[in-house]
Amino acid sequence: MEQVNRFKQPIVPADTGEIDFMNQELMECPYHAYSLLREEAPVWRDPTTGFWVVSRYEDVRAILMDPRTFSSSRRKEDEQVDSKRVQEANKLYLEKGWLPDRTLALRDDPEHAQLRTLFDHAFRAGRIKQLDPYVGELAYRLMREAVAQKSFEFVRAFAVPFPLIVIGNQMGVPEEDIWKIKTWTEAFCHRTGLMQKEDSAFLRNVEQEIEAQHYFQPLFERLRAQPDGSLLSDLVNEQVPGWGRPLNENELHAEMMADTFVGGSETSTNALSAGVMLLARDKDAWRQLKSDPEKYLRGFIEEVLRLESPVQSRLRRTTRDVEIAGTTIPEGSFVDIRFGSANRDAKRFECPEKLDLERRNAATHMAFGSGVHHCLGAPLARRELFWGFKAFVEMVDDFEVDEDKSNLRHVPNFWLRSLKELHVDLT
Image (tube, rainbow, N blue to C red):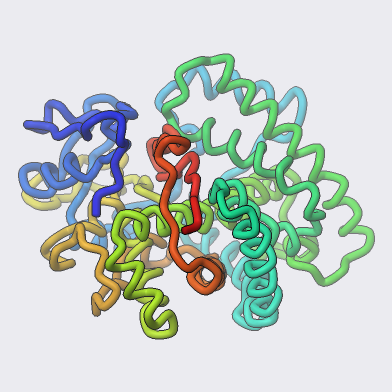
C-alpha cells in the first residue's frame, strides 16, 4: 500500500512539467511521478538539476551493469547543485578539519576494485557470521526495552540505535556515544541531500561533520600505534592493494562518515521504520507474517526494500553519447538512476504497489544497487533486518500507529527515503 502523508493528498502530476524532485510534498509520495515517467518519459531531463532521470527497471539495471559507459568516477561536488555552498564547505574543511576525499562509491576500476578489496576483507562473510549472535541478542534487548513501554516511538527506540550500535561496535565506538554519532550522520545526510534551503544550516552541518572528524582522529592514531584486529583497525592499517599504502586521513574521514556510519546504518534504519509502517497499513500482511515468521520473514524483508527503497537514487556520468529508450544522452551527462521507480516497475513486478510476502522475484529489486557497485554492506543489513523484524513479530501481539502523534513525513532528501517518526501503540 502507498505510504503517504495523512495531512495532504499526494501530488499526482498531470504531466512531466509538474514533476519536481526538489518539492518535498511530491517526495512524500514520489510514486505517482515515477509511474508517469516510466510510461511517458523513461529518460527525462530534470530541469532543476540537469540530471537525466532513468526510471524503468531494465534501463536502470543496464546502466548498473555497464560501468564503462556509466561511470561512477566524479567529484563529491558533482552531486551538489549549488557550487557556492560547495566552495564554502571545502574552505571550512580545510580550515578546521580534513577535506574528505572521494569515497568508494565515487571511483571506477581499478581504483574502485582495489579499495573495495580492503572493504570486502573488513566485511567478509566470516566476520558477519561471527557478528550474528551479537546482532540477534542486541535486537531482542532493544525490542524488549521498547515494548515494555506499551507505547513508543519506533524510530528513536529501535530503528536508529540498533544498526548504529552494531556498526559502532565494529568501529570501537561506545554504545553511549551513538546519539552523538547520529547527530553527525544526520548532518551528512542533510548536507548531501540537496533539499536544505538555508545556507546557515548547510554550513552548520559541515561544522558537525568536522566535529565527527575530531572525534574519530584519535581513534585512527591509537589504532596505528596499537592495531587490535577490529574492523576499524583493518581500515586504518591495511594497505590498499595496488596503492602501496593504507588510507590517508582525508580518505579515512570520508569513508568513516559516508560508507561506514551512514552506509552502515541509514539503510537499515529506514527499512526497519518503513517495514513497520507498511505492516500497520496492511493488517492482512501483518497477520500472514505473524502466522509463520520463518516462512514469510525473508520475503517480507525483500518487499520492504523493494517498496520503500531506502536509497531512492544514485548518479552516474556518461563517458560517451548513449541512447536509452530512444533518447540520446550526451557524453559527460549526469544520469539519475531511480531505484525507487525501477523497484515498482509493473513490467518487472506484478501488482508492484502490493506488499506480497510470497512474491517470487522480490529479491531481484535494486535497493542495494547491482553490478560492481552493489552495496558491500548488504549482507549485514539483511541480517539486521532479519533480527529486527523477527524480534518485533515475536514480541508484539498486535499494534497500531498513533497518527495523532506521528506526522508520518519523511526527512527532506533528494536521494534517501527516511521516515521521521513512528509512534506505536501495542494492543
